[in-house]
Image: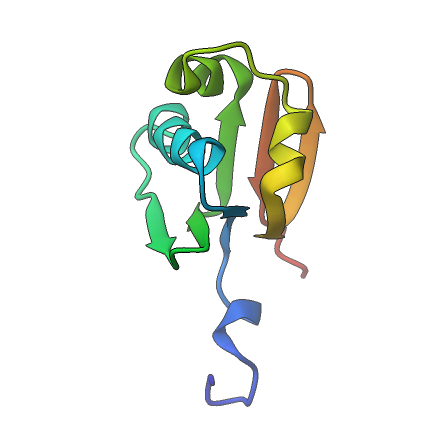
Length: 104
């Protein structure tokens, strides 16, 4: 816990999905690295699930997921394996965006 008694999840700006382990999670790891150049992508593999995170904003593009999977992919497929996420989420047919908005 942080010194003020608040857990670190509430005081950092990390964002990203928590996905059930499998092909979509592996593709999301690859897409996170490709779609977010210059960012440090952290992957925490817990065997049954995978947490993918970075600071501030993380984008996963449909086209990159298709390339990683080697097949057509629709963004709603991601939601089936998405057990949780950190930050806020914006979705559309071409990408999903996880982001952090700091409250003032």
